[in-house]
Picture 1 (tube, rainbow, N blue to C red):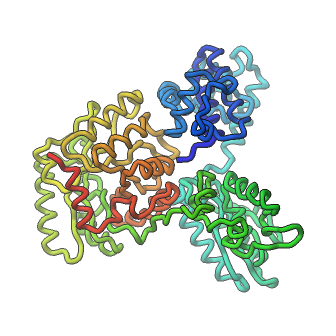
Picture 2 (picture 1 turned 45 degrees about the vertical axis):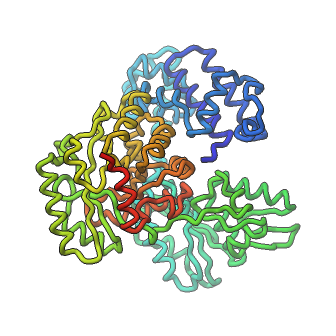
Picture 3 (picture 1 turned 60 degrees about the horizontal axis):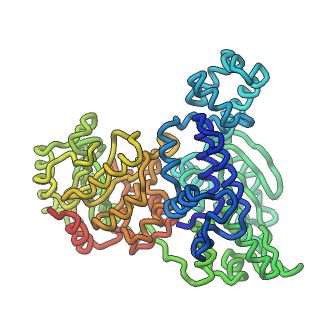
Length: 576
């Protein structure tokens, strides 16, 4: 994981926001804000300063305590202090900071005096006149809040990449059929496989007489046309997703694709490298003076800078430029490299297909094996399996394996990690399985130390193969629980077990940065769909996209192994 100075400054600013909302010591708050300003103004990276032996306490405003926190952030991407604060202040309170001119002090007053914990509660308070009664607010501020909330509500929300995916596929297919169209490409955060997208950027090259812009704005799913022009048009689909189409000359297509794919940080690094070579780089090409020397393809753009082509998923300015220069870019995992699925549910609990249907569905998808991992008894609302029912399922799997050809069902369970770190089923039944996934579905708000110790104790149990959806987050719905993921990764390495990257687009858990940390530690990651139906096997592509953002190669992925090798690795985790 490559944590840059702005990332560290962001963490310090967020800590200061939380502290100010909580009414903490003003000197402590100021220390974090001053440290943030110092870090943002630095030329060299803090990581490089540490590597050169420089003491961080020599920097203005950085004492021993803040220096230690910088080291924590460099190692994990966050700070335990921030994670603890997240548990004390509801996420909705921090959301109020999105309102312009509503800083931490005013948010603190709304939270503590009016008990407002969400944007919806703030809207109610502003509309009923309760906000103006607070000292320092008044009618004008209340009106500003109402207007800002209305504008925020109209702003297109970021949507799951899985929500955008089918719409993008349909629109691209439509554009490819327009007369005169030569090439169509999707750029932006969608191409980089970000977890969510705010809008969609599409590039097209077409002959001079092609009606591509007219056809674009006539697309059947259009709700509103925002702009129509010869080289750029914008519209909003009925789903609320905004799409921008740009018509690009063939000689600039690669440069435009590189530019509009982003990220901004990556593009700044690319342009900076170009300036060092005396070159100018923009969406039209790479120029040496007035002469265009590259731009028709992305490869030509990177080649002009002495770089190998960089996969879009890596373009976040996290070391990919250096890796491309030095020939160290990873051979990223692809969907075709996944041999099987290690997390699935059947109608025995909350799945929607039977054991046999799931097996045959996985086989049709080209998989070689499928682990059946229904929930354990703790989750009563979904009919979690007790010992008796799990034994019956084991027998059903044996009978089905006897007639399946070229495919193998593995016996597993998604066992609940209880609050004290014990597993929900006893060893006498777990030892009869091929693998055990341990997951958390309860007690999400434990303090970071207690939550971390809970997981570490679970991983130390006799039968423990994979930590399921390790942070428990649901994108745009539930924040991750507080956990020291660096400690979890170290324990996985020590214990010889594995971490899951849950491909469900609501989860995509592990994050890309934690995937990088696992890779660096030598901990294998299982890319699982957590399938609750045959249709869910198609979500594998989202997990693979996240894995690619995390620099994972086939060698880093547990279920990219053939069955025989997988069986050996799983057996080591079942050490009763």
